[in-house]
Length: 185
Image 1 (cartoon, helix red, strand yellow):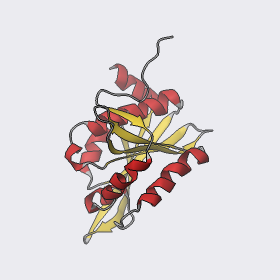
Image 2 (cartoon, helix red, strand yellow; image 1 turned 135 degrees about the vertical axis):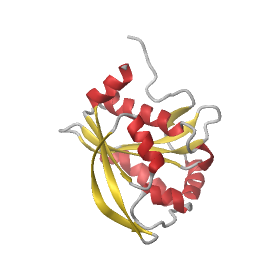
Image 3 (cartoon, one colour; image 1 turned 60 degrees about the horizontal axis):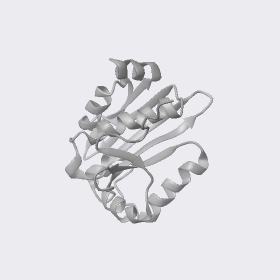
Image 4 (cartoon, one colour; image 1 turned 30 degrees about the horizontal axis):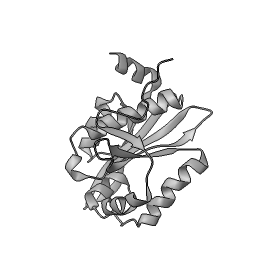
């Protein structure tokens, strides 16, 4: 059997968070634009211990895997990707990503990371369906998800209000057979 890399891409790899990453991650959660793309909750700074608790809880619950996105050249943490709320009997899960380092936005890091995460979800965890949500104003993420083959499945209209405007929350899904077809084609 030939060994293939599961979590290593060309520029990034999916690893674990380290204690020394917590201050870096905490800085991302001071950035309003970042926070408004991550959550419908009001932008409120996260403490390093809050993030640590979230990361440490995932493996114990057996419902998710959160990875640190790391740059291969220097092991620097760039963000996180989370395969979560896994429903094992139905083989489906949610997927979320956050690139905290602004200078790497729109540089292909998200695409490479998502490919690794989807490969992990479909081929290592043997999942059948991956779903995610995204706010209608996050056009960078929408383009990424559609490029990866996700299908728009609907919207919760006027789900949130920000700065006096109403925005929809879009739902996207990707089935294993669609991922395999795209990988081959």
